[in-house]
Image (tube, rainbow, N blue to C red; front, side):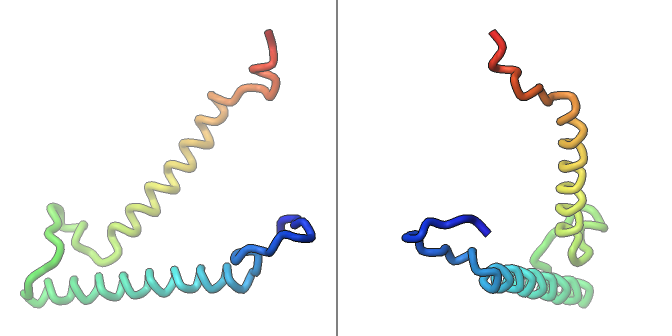
Length: 97
């Protein structure tokens, strides 16, 4: 936790309970959206009007875009770690003149 002055009022997210509430809320929202995605997929399989119109077959699977986004973020982090080795400068780089 951050150090606070005596007069400073603690923030909402300084309490670990509030952080856990936000995380659990995000989990709940993800679960509801995934459940709705499954319902939409089942309706599409049954011949009802689909909300999505995938161009490729694999795009129609429930949770595809969440999985795709997760893999893309992991790849971005891995590429950025390697780029850091090439682009990183020593701490005094701009102080030299």
